[in-house]
Length: 143
Image 1 (spheres, rainbow, N blue to C red):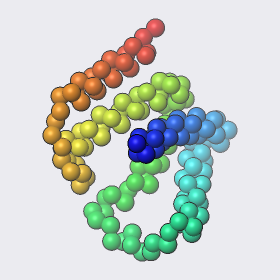
Image 2 (image 1 turned 45 degrees about the vertical axis):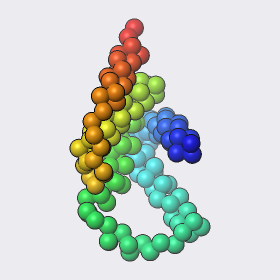
Image 3 (image 1 turned 90 degrees about the vertical axis):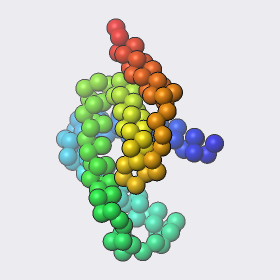
């Protein structure tokens, strides 16, 4: 149940963050806004590290495979794509498409066992659920 609540909170925070970042971009520009987002996230993580745990920063060198260290680079891309999609589609349509895309890509990662994730069997009920979600996108956009 806790995981469910945290996931709902994550989605809500992502939507609010996307709107905030889009508003900041209107004044500052894309890359200043993106840099601000990443810098403030970094600073919060440093503060949290001081209070919540003191794992050695050097353990980052032990992470394998090395490509998983690209999460921050991907984060900058996420910030850029969220801002651009919210600018062009509005928050609701952008969030809907972002969530559907996350769902499909996450399921493909699970089914194929990519990036060290334990491989899961293909379940047609999940595929049907994603198709229903895509139909929902069509209905949502229908005028």
